Length: 185
Image 1: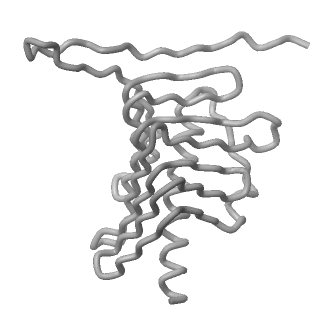
Image 2: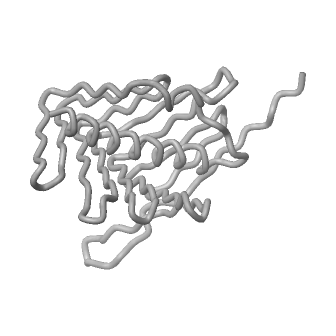
């Protein structure tokens, strides 16, 4: 049981670290998350939890709230799995799934939401799907899809398409960035 708890905490920590990198790097200039959060315990609340060690998967369902220091992730479901090479993969879903974390040394927060947020530990990429947004201070990025590659320090926001009644693909939205002027003191 202690080994399960350590593996679960390691899996959850890697998901959180990737999540933090996504939030930090999606909006320029780079902001730093609350550094002390890394040393805090991870607490997950949910209506149900299922751990299948044989398959290397943990599933949290129903009003999921993950807290680590100032980081708060809310979802309807959080699934964490480990592949055969030991890489972590996580999926948080909800309408929406949200996150919020205090920036290091500042009084403001980084916040975001999407219907689905996935982390690929093997490729070190975070994907935010469907109605994705990331806000830092007064600046916000919107898109149907936001991806961040933590290795390449590369972020991308895209708009999506949908099919009309004739089956033709139609653009359904555009990416949008709102950058508000900095107040001069």
